[in-house]
Image (cartoon, rainbow, N blue to C red; front, side, top):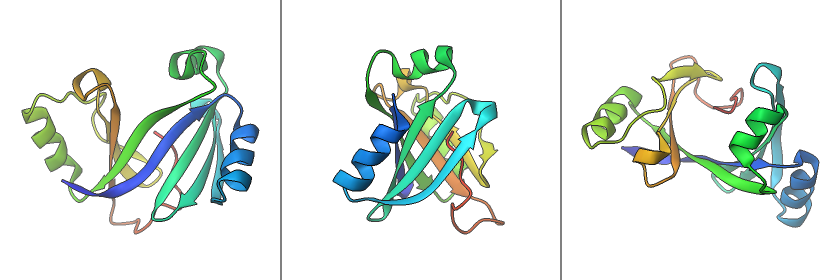
Amino acid sequence: MPDRIDHIAIVVDQLSEAQAFVGAIMNMALVRELTIPERSVRVAFYQCGSVQVELIEVTDPASRERRLGDAKARIEHLAIQVDDIHESVARLEGLGVEMASRPQLIGGRLAVSTNPSSSIGVIFQLLQETPQTGSHEDDQPA
């Protein structure tokens, strides 16, 4: 099923502080930054080898509390690129893994996430390139 790890998403309390650490201290290169008002998030993607690190600052207080709690930062999900998202979902559901939603188009790719209660307490996001996208330069976090 998995083709490769696409990105690791980390929800952070302060995006600017996290960016300073990841960029200056960890020496990762900034790939892109996004503000997505309809999702109440500010996001920055950094390159680490063939994998990206997605830093997410949630701006809506209720959503922020739900996603971050009282932590300064936490890993939120692991995104895996797959060849056929529908086949992957069917296989996982057949093994008892529940999806949080049906696959949806996000940033030019199909995306779906597992319900962490059915996937060892971790959110796994599956991503599939669509014919119009060969890369993920316009990705938005899911």
